[in-house]
Image (cartoon, rainbow, N blue to C red; front, side):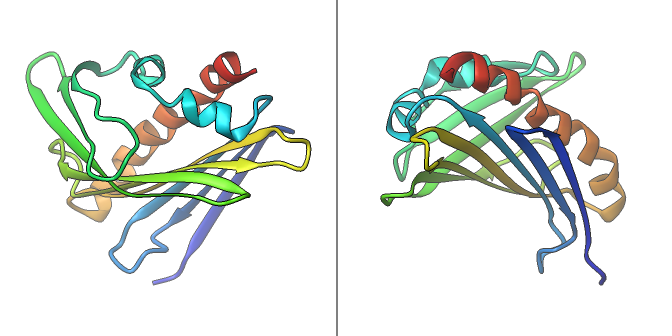
Length: 172
């Protein structure tokens, strides 16, 4: 299958890249990078329940049952309210790490809403030479079919673009 790549430079501090079907499991990939003014250790301390709630877009309505945090084994449990029905989303942090250049953690979907079959979300806080941070969200996801991949892609893409001004407001 051929690989298709789309990149968007939002403005000098933000970058979004998407790969259509780069992953062997037929996953879509979204990369969102947002530069903020705080040091990457400070930004990491801010990855808490309050930030999680702030990053939640208005649609669909989300009921946060449990926010576990960013350490391996921690679970986050949501109920998504789609007006006529509700669906659960449970993710578990499967990996975390820190180097002199970055702090990261990865959450993976264990119980996913009807429109997802696979979810892998890398959160990377990259140190810049100016001692600022680039917050990078790398998302791999798969829906039941290639057609639903295409249909749900714009909605998931916009869910993450929504984060740019929130990251900037909180961490600048």
